Image (cartoon, rainbow over all chains, first blue to last red; front, top):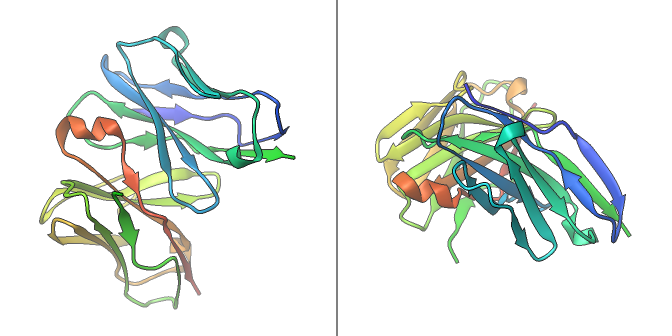
Length: 115
Length: 115
């Protein structure tokens, strides 16, 4: 069985603060894929990033960065110098390496960035 | 711009009614999915379809059925709506095979209230 845990239900920060969203996963697959999605108030989930289990290189995209550590089964997401537009629900998701197309989502973290 | 369109943004139905939620995608994707999103529970997969007339149960199929007569359209059916089906329903699509690794494309959701 696959599982994704986002322990932080809600986080509130002040603009320009850095914030890290935690994601811990469980899977028996040796090959798997991890995702982050953003859900702004409009409701539509937006794909942010995918990482493969065989590629532990961290990634940076502008103010966003992701830290993937297989040793701790974690795939954390950091926003640097947060902005009000970053306010959203963020979901971490996992897909196993088989032919199953299903993504298993965490429960999400509501991030509120206050001006 | 590629899109997944859900026919209704908000819907109010009475207990016992038969409810149809419609989803259309214009990306020629083989895979389509229905999730429901509830506070504290994240996204849970109801059904998915990997081809026309093909469907598989997700994690919470009870009380729901689906129909996929055409590639671009995937309908979720509540045979007899109940108050515990009040939720946000999200439709998504993805390309087949390894295309799913590029992430799902989500619709904006239908917020269904059953009274």
